[in-house]
Length: 332
Ligand code: PMV
Image 1 (cartoon, protein in one colour):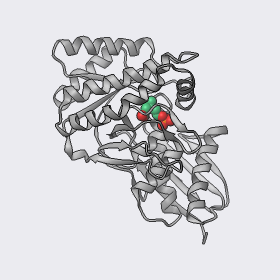
Image 2 (cartoon, protein in one colour):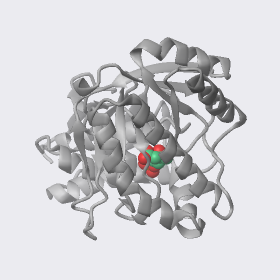
Image 3 (spheres, protein in one colour):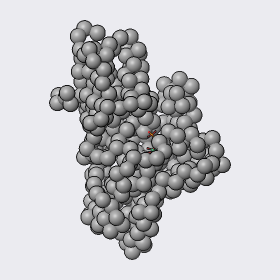
Image 4 (cartoon, helix red, strand yellow):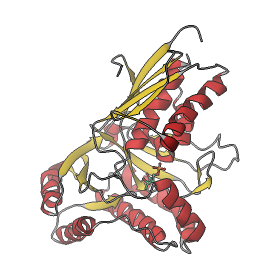
């Protein structure tokens, strides 16, 4: 490279309504099934990359990353450089989120999406969401869905090289301005089992895994229709169904994986009761204890109150956000 090159990008996390659960190719991070997510603003992660600076660093949320976490970040930068035919020299990466990491709040999705956008730009490449999504995917599967905003679908693809497995926008954020995600932080602790390991267990040992895969593409089509019609009840019902089925698959593995904590169950049962009493609220849970409640702007306050009454330490109201973007304010 001709001298150091520094770039910074910001991305929102995303929460899947039809979940991704299980890889058909671990190295390339290719899923067994397609998934659909909502990009959540204002939560965000900022990532700065500098290539050829003379010193190597990978710092995530203020601490030096080690082991596999560090390797994943450096590897992604090397893949991007190799594809561009450029030797990156020494690599410096800093990433900073404004919400708890590794607590099932999709922090890695936003971080890897921002990294993919920043590193390609640092290599002098133009913005190409499809390429950025495929690169982000290799860092963390769900990151493929944080490159673009609004509602995104990650198509599973069929090619062994993964060149047809990327996320694209289905609907822009403006499609459904009143849609709300209420993120309930029940625990700030790092989860015991990574989603990567938990998925592997499900694929290899859950007797329900094949049924999960068979079901998913139909759910994507049904959900797309519900979102197209801004049909909150149907969208919520499908989201809760996909989440429940994902957790059932994991729970049927050997050994069983249980992500819910007591407060997660409390939120689920309170939401069900409130719904029966007329509150539009549905719950989806990723690979951790923290639930995300789906509702509309008119009921956001009532849903936040429900989450607090079930023990949430913090509640963050989100709406559909835009895609990852390059910014001028670097982290170092
Ligand atoms: O991208 P990963 O490897 O962190 O996996 C994400 C898995 C879920 O969050 C549980 C589901 C999803 O589609 O985001």
